[in-house]
Every structure is written in C-alpha cells, then in structure tokens.
Image (cartoon, rainbow, N blue to C red; front, side):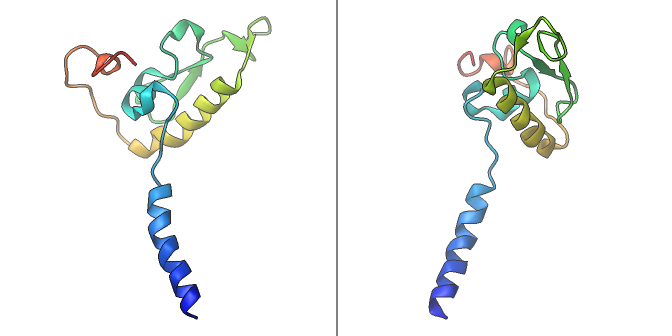
Length: 111
C-alpha cells in the first residue's frame, strides 16, 4: 500500500514537468520565433511557413513533394517541425507581438 502511494506521489511531480512543450531543436528552443517565423532560418528552403495568427495555421510553400511533383522530398526535419508547430503553437491561443528592437529572430542572437 505504501509503495503505491509513493508511485502516485512521484507521478504527480513527473507529469507537470513532462507537460512543458518544447520546440527544440528549432530556433534555439524559442517558441515565439518558431511559431512566428517558422522552422527555417532561410524561408526559401522551407516546405511550409506559418500563417497569422500563428496558432497552428500554415501554408505549404510548394518547394517540396508533395505538392510540387518536382520539388525536394520532405525530410524528417521538415515533418517533425510541422508536427511540433501544429502541437505547440495552438497552445498560445493568441500570439504576442515582439516589443524589442529588430525582430524576435535577432535577439539576443540570430536564431
């Protein structure tokens, strides 16, 4: 009986820690930049781009197959980034705006 209480107690501490959403390894694990600007630093290489209001809406760029029959194939990197975008970004409900100098991509370092 005591052991089951200990297991339940440990699960209670472990679950909140696992509930944190992460976008690592994209954009230095910065969800604001990832959800606002997408997963590629160079958008010309991206298979998809986020659409305002940046809460899970995206557009395929046509650079990859599908939809472009002659495009490059989707990599695991592209697929994982889209899955994370659809999972992490809707949690924000309403996106914030960048209030610092430049864009969010440039602070504190380009990422």
